[in-house]
Length: 192
Ligand code: UDP
Image (cartoon, rainbow, N blue to C red; front, side):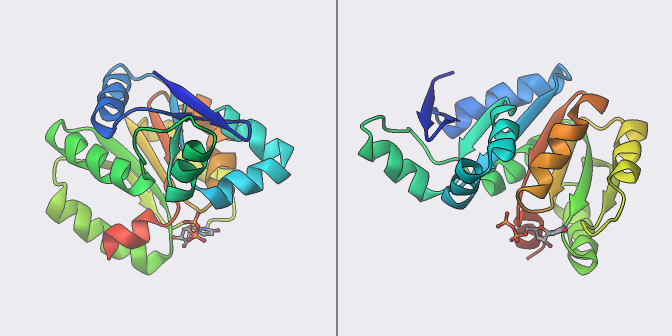
């Protein structure tokens, strides 16, 4: 997989379909996989914060999520093929996961958003087995980690915002083999 480095972050440089195939194969094989979706704000924050930078560098795949990343790549004459947003990955993995009866854990966003998200999942992605679903305003990370450990989902979707979601994934990814992805405001958007 081709990658392009901008300000010490290595972004995947491929098209959406190819990336999706790689991720689907890794989920099928229950490979431990951390995807970080990085926009210019996050890239800037990482540049200022070495600890967060190392967390982003721990991701197996960093997707260029934001037109600013694509523009920056053009400026340094290392064009990136395609912008890949967290939201697009989320929807595509949900659709595929529904068809293939994958299990998923969801944590993030406000309680009212989670109520709406549950309805959307039931209506539009009925094949997804929900191993757990909760809002993102919990006090104790360990409680959430224990729930993920106990229910052993194929996929963990976290919408806690950055840097929280990536810090959580970095700390707990080894308790469950499968996909871990930070999705920012994607639960809010999907629950619409
Ligand atoms: N959020 C959360 N817990 C927190 C802080 C934020 O679940 O402690 C949620 C928030 O409700 C929203 C999501 O994180 O659904 C993304 O927040 P924001 O838009 O600030 O982050 P970004 O998308 O810019 O990373």
